Image (cartoon, rainbow, N blue to C red):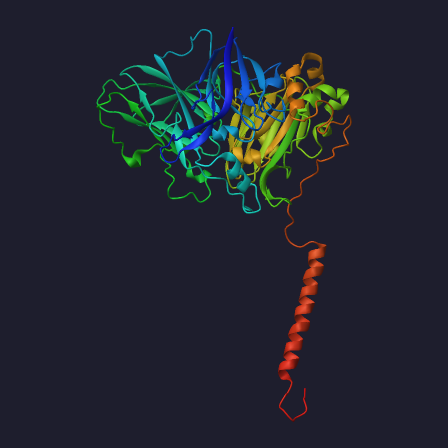
Length: 562
């Protein structure tokens, strides 16, 4: 069965969700917010997308496997070139899983400007969970300025420390005044989707016990939680049972984690609330301020997937050290192993499909990016060492990964191996927060031939280059996958190439227009040392001259003396 949507993507004027400042946003069919999407396991989600913007766009169904349809993953510059202005492109996305997801723009930070909506995938028969009704809550940060000017400044010489744009407010269901109506004694399934550019939220409901039953679309055994921290792109589903009276209404909290912001202004209200309404006339429950639950008490590693899978084998391992550094363009960039991800003229999906055996060479996708080519049906390990002073939510397209280790400091693979072996059924998800000055170790099984982006889901960090690419079984791709002509057509409309390496050449050495970005030098190089010595000598000569002149006797009529 097909779930058919016809979308005209364009600007919508005079939108003011926080009541503080109207602005234009990117909406669908002339309205915003965009309606949530609901589909069922086994469906095909069909989206006929017409681009009414003046730049290209793309739509990514976040968290979906796209097994066999990597070209519909919607990551512009990776699995497609984008949808050209004034043209229409159709996505045919097979629904191969259930749970809580979201669909968003994956080009030029367009989801920050509003191109985002929840995507709920239901089983054909709901038998595991018992509940009376379902609630979907989106959490998002909100900016009064559009993404482009904010990003232009963020990646400029005027922001050498890399301070991210701080949002002006936070929203629940695209509003600062959301009301969620409930009835006494009923049990609700609450799906929470974080669609923020930067903000991380601490989610809880005053006076109510929450039970986690799903994380990033993965069903887990019921796990009680008073408060759960939820970062950009992460999702959770909870069960809770309503009170047996209508005496009070209660606050739904999505309080911002202020440690994510560098010098936030006093005007930013971190307490983002909605109302859980039992009665329109009931007073608000007055929860003691000192009884707010501690989100750090939540241990995500205790979540147990309903379907047990032992740790995948470590057939291929890659280590990424994450750090922000000032580069030779004067901007502060996010890096994996001191490498900024740069896009070429050919999306990697077409490089993989057109380069024959050369598609197994990572250099074909640009020798200046972090690219990992994997074999088919192998276990892949990603070691993430976060050398940065902030937390980072990393997302892998096309897979859920196992979180086999997480902690503080730099990961020691020798000491950690025994702990991983002892795991029976590690947590699985598609977006993981790596702690400040800490690490996470992920494993996934390469059973989904395609090209899969791996990046920080803080949108500003993705724009700053904090990304890499996994090219999974390219020779299998060439055997089993047929890229639709519509992908090539859009590339040609945008002036892009449709075959060859990252710049359209049939080799692994020719990349005109691409080059390695260089870290801005610190300290003194050879030229700097010579210049410094010259300055010191000149200063000493000048100082000696001044002293000599000051000691000279220049009385009129008397010969000068020394």
